[in-house]
Length: 134
Image 1: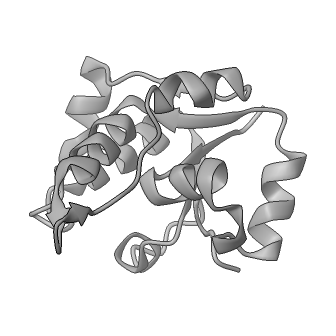
Image 2 (image 1 turned 180 degrees about the horizontal axis):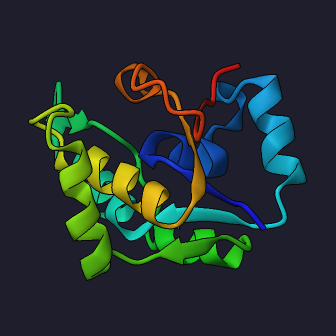
């Protein structure tokens, strides 16, 4: 079974605003036997929800977002040592964003398809990185 890992934005959209996900990606999500999210995504989304833009949180994140995802039937991929070591495969990728590198490494190590809307990830050209907005 191929795992379908949602990057941080797609994970958020899936649970909060699914209209941002494209039709083909939505079909892929519906047909997947199981959906996965990274523990690193919970960290990233929590961090973004604490940043302020014009006096408001940059992101409205429901309390216990990870628990909501698990209750919805998703599985968490924890950050493990082997993922951290695999992240060096992406050292040249977006030096300012270690969370994206971690999610890429997790997808690679877990033999997962990564569903993302991140143009820089898509431009890597790997067949296991799929556009969520198509």
